[in-house]
Length: 390
Image 1 (spheres, rainbow, N blue to C red):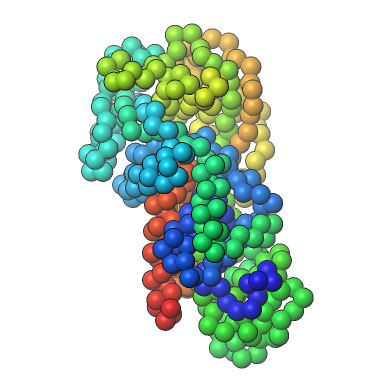
Image 2: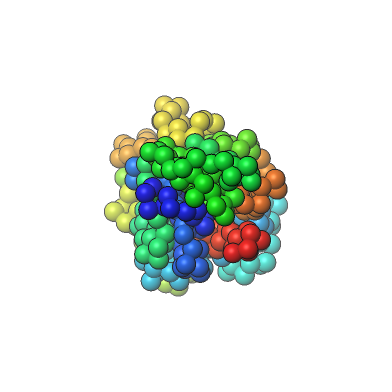
């Protein structure tokens, strides 16, 4: 904190997951003169949700607002990092109802995402049971840990400061009385009146305090904890299992070049009542999930024993290839996805405190949407700074 204590930072970003890292990345690229502090509670990057994602680059989401960000984010991700983090293998989405498919087709048309509808007979030929499907050849797989490190590396190379093991404990509005009567620097790193000059918010942390003209709330599962705004962190279980299975799933046969659902093939995501996904890995194994949603406290990453039987029940009903005895588990973990009450991302200035910008509630779309989320949040930050004369 010492190098940030001489005066206020322009922007303090709470959380170095995909929302916070991408905001720092976008701001540092666009405004390299800004003093940016990226504050992460964990000892290392990717310790929580952003680093535990299955990395499925699904562009079409359940609503228009989210789809706008996932499509834009995927396009930016293809362009940055020399394409090292996005691997285009296609995605197969399946549905229980025709109306659900039609909603996805409308969003695909609106955002110009090439796709092809498949009926139940075509899906049976591919080895799955569902009413309808959507083949999205431009979907991909994301290397989440290297991508997250890239965003932070690019931001810090342009002058942003990353502070690990730094938990934010309070956000306090600075009044004129605070500026006038603030104490001098303390051993905790609170820079007092000198630090408060020109700042809007005081950010208390486990390593001392700093002052910021604008604060970005991008703390993932912890979003809203300091302000009372409502978010719900929900746990999902993910399992790594060996493959391939007999009569393995495969992509539509007329794709050029052919794409089988193997280590080089697409993911499959059933978006019906018994939601489940399958994601192939380079080593021939699979990541599979029952897509459960279990309430918990922020940072809760425990495993529940009843999640695995539910996985095999859902997989067996979805594909005959997975209806046999369950294979041995190679690995199991859980991760949290965080939602606002309406399940849409929150990207806005706080109505009560315009110097507080929200980049929260990404709902499991963080890796795919990251770059677009970062650019949107950066635009909000620049507007807030401009309103404060900077």
